Amino acid sequence: MQILYFAWVRERIGVGEEVLAPPADVATVAELLDWLATQSPGHAAALADRSAIRVAIDQDFAAPDAPVAGAREVAIFPPVTGG
Amino acid sequence: MIVTRAQAHAFDAAAETSALTAGRTDIGAVVTFTGHVRAENGLEALTLEHYPAMTERSMAAIAAEAAARWPLLGGTVIHRHGRLLPGEAIVLVAVASAHRQAAFEAAEFLMDWLKTRAPFWKHDGSGWVAAKASDDDAAARW
Image 1: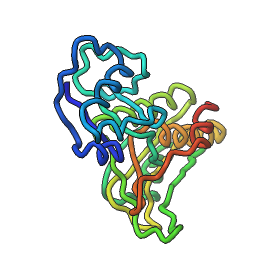
Image 2: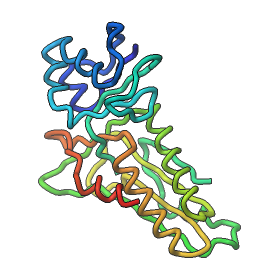
Image 3: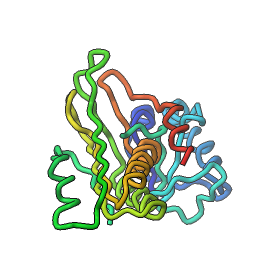
């Protein structure tokens, strides 16, 4: 699974993208974030406040209970601030 | 029908607006919004990061939603990324319709949704700009 990070999520994790293979029992976006937070202190710091985390699966916003099965690209980032 | 672009380089708002109405006699209203970088709190530059693959999809989806909700006769939405200096234009929304109400409403809608659904993030040189609850409220009213 290709995982992309943007803005301060990217800075706290230390990389813009990585390829990871979550265990089979990671079924939802929320479970993926829980698992990712265990990967390093940077991941834990970036994902500590879930209210400030947004997720897109294959370039579409995904809710915490959305399934991650079959996702090719998961992006994790703060609330957007364009415009 | 509504053209969307994400680009690093500057745009010419007047030329984009003129292009919407060139050769047209059915358009009775064009509403244009241009957002600029403000020099506040000693800002030297804004840097916008974005998620290119999703930016394109989300801008197109937002434009399609506007076209579905209002009887628009054309439109152009441009959002810049990269480093922008105070005074520079950062975003353009221009929409054309037969009557003004649709154009006014669609322009507001497009801006509200761009601010809350298009994957751009502003860095002001000292930190990442935080999202505003008022922007979420503005987007939710549509």
